[in-house]
Image 1 (cartoon, protein in one colour):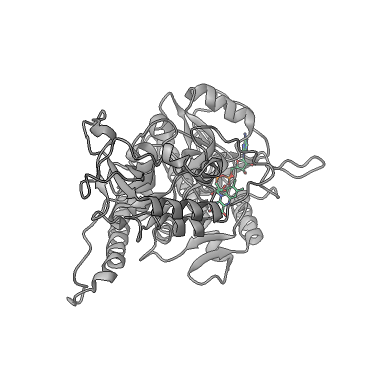
Image 2 (tube, rainbow, N blue to C red; image 1 turned 135 degrees about the vertical axis):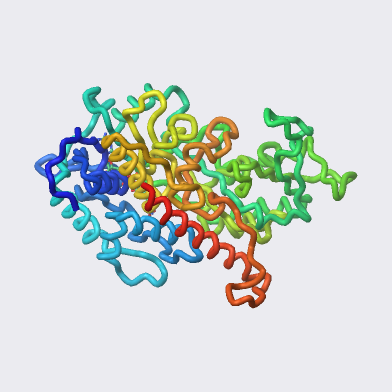
Length: 469
Ligand SMILES: Cc1cc2nc3c(=O)[nH]c(=O)nc-3n(C[C@H](O)[C@H](O)[C@H](O)COP(=O)(O)OP(=O)(O)OC[C@H]3O[C@@H](n4cnc5c(N)ncnc54)[C@H](O)[C@@H]3O)c2cc1C
């Protein structure tokens, strides 16, 4: 740890959640002073958000789990390993306050938050100011990280909206499930754009189509209507906009509604059965530049996650679907990062402002902290007159940056939606046929073996990046 006085101007971090706490730590550990502005405080008139209950830094607002800690076969476990290699405060405090949770990294949330607060408060280069930044940060601050999370205070959110332009900031997410391409049965599905229309990319076969006959459609609607739905929190007040209604709400309005909406079968011909008109068709649209992830067009939903997997696997071609992301609809605040941010997480129109955490369009405690880690390192390097490139996209950290700053394919208004880390964001590798010992790997275990290879590649490439950085 650096305890020398520093000659650098401070970086200002707005928001002391998972991302802001990690960013502040990374900056201070690089020898650059940091002022962390957090609006939550105790006192005669305590300040909280709708979801936070304490004034502790890095408060976990819901579950106490950082999910799987398995770096070999799970992308979030891999992200843990990479963050540990980067001296992450969040991972170190989590390791210290772990509670038994099988293969998951779960923590005593109070002990964890107290540890993060204690370590930041004790750092000689960190000042913590309990105040709301109620508008654009002052011009005099020439390096700022905005890490104000899904519940960014309204005054700051409005200022970001003004700066970024209409439609570049969302106050709600409307998430449709995303599927790994290699889990779609292409013996049932086919590629075709509606009416064979060529889009700007000149591709008349841009979509993957999944056909349904009448009986399959009816069974699907029954399951959709019967499936358990997640409730909104009282304060969420999420409005339903026509155009992004949850599919189960559409189905409640009439059994045929979906067939005239996102599941309409017109302009598409099943090449395996060209004379028979499909009763309904589900379309998947490419979601990332790598072409490994495909989203279910118009399928935003409040069905509970377990039910989603079950109901959507009833769709022909998706019987064995692996979901990179399941659907949802929440109050959230996030910017259209692919359009607004450069690869260093700076706002293109105001490069003194960086963004980190959930507000960049990642989803989850770990991913938010990971974006804080990267924003902190970028800001510290810049203060020292150095330039720092993001880690390669073969790493989980690099893949997240790549996704939010360019990897996601623009698919019309609202197509950029929050994303968890998953292997589909990393450049694919061939599944190995034999193990390191030369023994043949059974077909059904090759997917796992591929994940392990991708994790090994990621850790190797991260090490090389850390060495150069
Ligand atoms: C209700 C809810 C439940 C969630 N549950 C989970 C879960 O179980 N698991 C999971 O992985 N993810 C969950 N998430 C998603 C997300 O990963 C977490 O919200 C995570 O905390 C995001 O990290 P962050 O640092 O971006 O934001 P936060 O951790 O929310 O930190 C942002 C901080 O900024 C402060 N702030 C806001 N505006 C200002 C301002 N103008 N000035 C100064 N300070 C400000 C806030 O007080 C807050 O401390 C949940 C989100 C919500 C809203």
